[in-house]
Image (cartoon, rainbow, N blue to C red):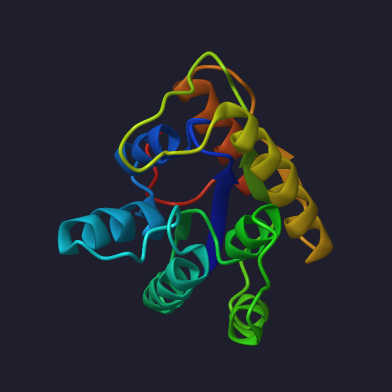
Length: 183
């Protein structure tokens, strides 16, 4: 099992890269938070990050643990749009406490090295219905993510600010070639 994380601040090209990795034959796990926001908005719930970050983080933790468990038996590499440690960084940036259950989940559900981090990129950053942070907030989150993953013992590699094709090649080179993936 080789579970890799592609993380970074909002609007840095993670989802686009993951779509390209999927087209290249890789297994990809979509971002839990984006789906949860859509679900909670549709329900008219207050459990959205801009109203109740702590409650939302609990929902995200449960979803992300389930995603990790579902991906673990996969024979080839699996690429996650964000990992459980992202929750620690989001809560840190917001000045909120991290529940013991979240710390335990982060410790129990590890990922492969390296962790790929998409740096802030003003040229591609846009807001949408699920991306409510300002660019400055995205930058702060990026730095918190780097600190968090490094503190947990992960080797962090910044994705280059280049074409999607070149980002895919960068990930392939850093993660090593794998059977079944298109070149």
